[in-house]
Amino acid sequence: MTNSDQLASATQADRVLLQSAPVIRRALAGNVTRELYLAFLAQAYHHVRHTVPLLMGVGVRLTARHHWLQKKLVHYLEEEVGHDEWILNDIDAAGGDANQVRESAPAVETDAMVAYAYDTVMRRQPTGFFGMVFVLEGTSVALALHAASSIQHALALPDRAFSYLRSHGTLDRNHPDRAEPLVWQGIVLSTYAGVKGGLGALSLAKESRDSLLAAVKLNGDVLNGSAYTSLGALYYKVPRWPVGFADHDKAAEYLRKALALNPDGIDPNYFYGELMFEEGDYAQALRYLRKAVAAPLRPERPLADSGRRGEINALIARARAKQG
Image (tube, rainbow, N blue to C red):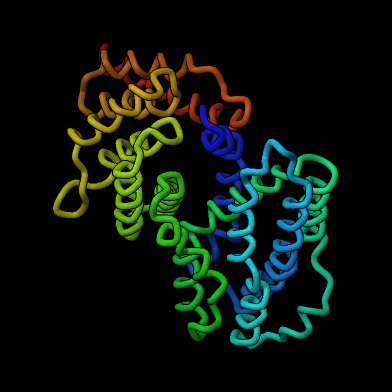
């Protein structure tokens, strides 16, 4: 497993938790007030203004083993300069008081997050900072544009009030040669589509599919074949033509590719077993579902895997009942 795969696996539960936060769901649904949006921007300012100093701290404390990161770190640092000022400009454009926010103290929760980041960089392992960056940036890249559009529509605010949010929705265009960001964008979008539900989620499912297909074109093997797993699930869960793009043959093809890369994984076995159930092949469904339920719990995802096991056991019971 590559370092990227390990980071993705270790932070999966945190990213899912962030995506499911009530305030995130409210923002995506456009169920926000101007006061709530301004409060979000204020706290965003109080942590984003520390990004450049934290990156400088990481650079100073890099060990010889990590010197290869220096050029990449400088490039990242240059990209981040001025983002705190974008937020202050957004506050002004949204009718808030940027000067008051600049002089204010952060919320306790924001202060604790920033303090933990400094402690990680200065006293523990400086590269540990990238774990937090991965969770926040990896989630925001897929959801920021949708949140910005929903909030703008609800509050009738000008475009210039969303420069910060919209800047975080362009990672795939800024890093066209990397498959991993596209995989995570696809996963987050498909998760959001599942939460939203109904025909209104179909456009999100299509965006998810397109991101995953682009990732596969670059390198489908990254993240233990997660792009293939997610594509397989999408192709049998969405509605059929003419409403959707369901294609069970494609679903089976992608899931078999996922299983070739991750034969003992809980997710590819579960989704392939569920597809076989939908196809009426209950013997094959039970074969893969039993393999899925036997998969060891991942240390970094005990709650998610426990929930998945509940789904698997329920489907096993249904498959047995169908077999008679």
